[in-house]
Image (cartoon, rainbow, N blue to C red; front, side):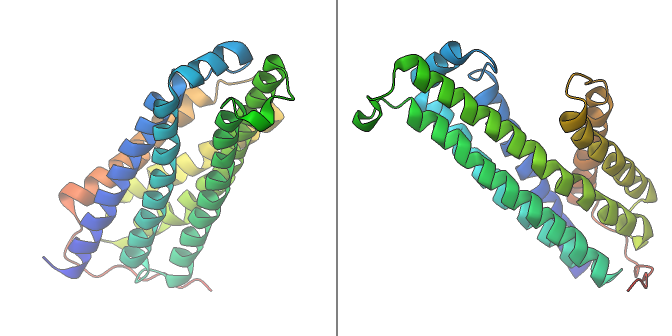
Length: 233
């Protein structure tokens, strides 16, 4: 196996594992426990499923590390096309990972508020539940803040995939389109929170773009040819 194929399959493997663990953290660790706006029910769910909630939190952290490692592997694969653009998408990915991991602290804080620790007895139960819900809303907003980085990193990534010469151009086009829609999703969340129609486009498109890229890299690898070098900067 030549170096390019090996790098491609490492990137695909890391990306696939990231997607699986991230989905596990969301579906198993949170979606069945958190009811945004209902502090009492959410508190009961978290206290009744403490380990499930913690596993979701730890899975989130692991997924973040894997996502950055996948970006690093893609950087190694695509830097012969253009090193500056490859470094750009790597740094944008790192920015998103940093914001996302920081927002995960609010998940942990919400559980700590509901832990029944002695030092929290100065607060009434409904106050602690409200504070825990506040922390969960902070987590949600922090996670969405990370999406401006995750949306932006897809543009140089998609462009380099398109220009590489050893990956299908259609994948690059889909990734760049996904970038535009994901950035619109970020803007919609903060500027037009009651308008969610764009989610119905951006989420399926994101699945096709990122899952498609990871599967292609893992199964098909890359063509045995030199990339078309792009001179920018």
